[in-house]
Amino acid sequence: MQNIPVITVDGPSGAGKGTLCLKLSSTLRWHLLDSGAIYRVLALAALHHDIPLDDVNALVPLASGLDVSFESVNGTTKIVLEGEDVTFDIRNENVGAVASTIAAIPPVREALLRRQRSFAMSPGLVADGRDMGTVVFDNADLKFYLTASAEVRAERRFIELKEKGHDVKISRLLTDIKARDDRDINRSNAPLKAADDAIIIDSSTLDAVQVFDIAMKEVLDRRLV
Ligand code: C5P
Image (cartoon, rainbow, N blue to C red; front, side, top):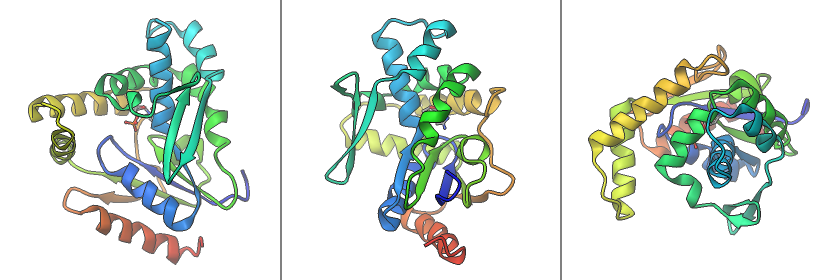
């Protein structure tokens, strides 16, 4: 891991981390770690196996032996759990809520550490999550903390779901986002927070291109490529 350059992007859900990381990794031609997807896959596996969300003795071996693969298909990532394509299933709100519940269990996080670090491969890695810059890659070369107000994040999610034909209420989305923020920020182990050396970007009034331009300028200033 020592010599592989790593850029971390942490922040709350809906801040635009996924879009920024995808753009950075494809521009730099570096690997991409979507650590939230790992927690989501674990959540789905727990649901499939009827494992109670507080059963640490069952969740830890499930996490360390998680049979998941991330396959690159035409510029997108196909996620396969126990032989089944779960790329779309892991994105629903319930799976996100279960993911944030089990992500608060310290031994579960510990069990996923090595798997996440194994994504650091030449020529470099862009890592998306909540604790990438604070825990998993605390020696990263460049760290971002991307945030936006809960209201703006709920509105973005609302537009995204409406476009997909889902019937959702913005007030409900805002409540869910605040509940998830609360769980992620207030957990004792690896809580969501900016690393001391992270560059903070508030995307509340920025679009995806502006966020990317700010991040890319930092990458170039540091001569990471
Ligand atoms: O980023 P995403 O919304 O897919 O993550 C789902 C949940 O997984 C988050 O709400 C968070 O609780 C958890 N997570 C985490 N640490 C990470 C990435 C995600 O605890 N590095």
